[in-house]
Image (cartoon, rainbow, N blue to C red; front, side, top):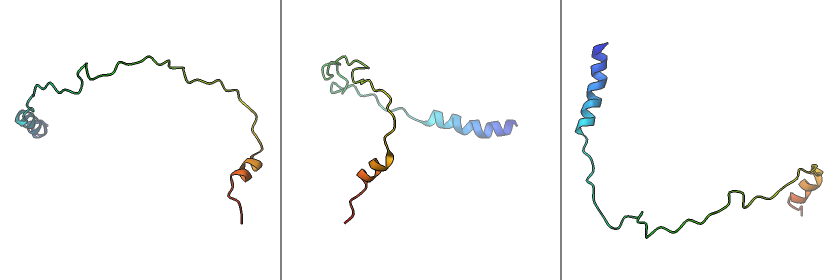
Length: 72
């Protein structure tokens, strides 16, 4: 059992030690500068709500015939 653990753990440990981190570059052209961001306006979460009441179903045959392509 210990041999299996070593076979799995050793490559994972070695790959973690071998990787190099990217260089950190300080730049003034960062896209998240506060001067480049627009102020956020408040939008009500229920601003676009319209009240709808349930209605009885309409006869489907008339609706289906109205949407069908015309013959001829």
